[in-house]
Length: 196
Image (cartoon, rainbow, N blue to C red; front, side, top):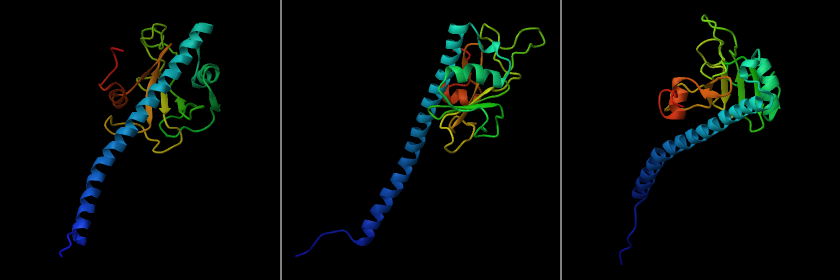
């Protein structure tokens, strides 16, 4: 009587094929899951900032342009309107931002930098009440958001197809908007958000 079965080399070959297929499918799935988590956390962070700005405007009639500096905005608006668990004295998780830092109860770390309510060359207030100009001293970011806090990778997103955990935004008088090509393309799935 003949017994049928697989040889050891056939079993090893099948295991190798299954391993290769697993590697090819698990890595993209992991990247997609991580990108979805980052996008969800970024949306939540922007909503928190926007809710704080709107609440301040509704209760005190102040907008972001009524604050004088990074520290003033964080201390007298965000710390008052958000569930902040850490002081502004800690360092941000990336060297890119060295402004006023605060951490919310969910672990998201924010850094307000380059905040300005100065006048431009035409005499218009940067950060005007119409939300058409951001409260930033130059054409750059003034809100840095580390969506997963102190967890790695603590890197700025520079490629929308390879999202990291730090994103940039600009603060306007009563709202915040994602800033930068990579962050906008990742978040909005296009190059800019002028229509929003």
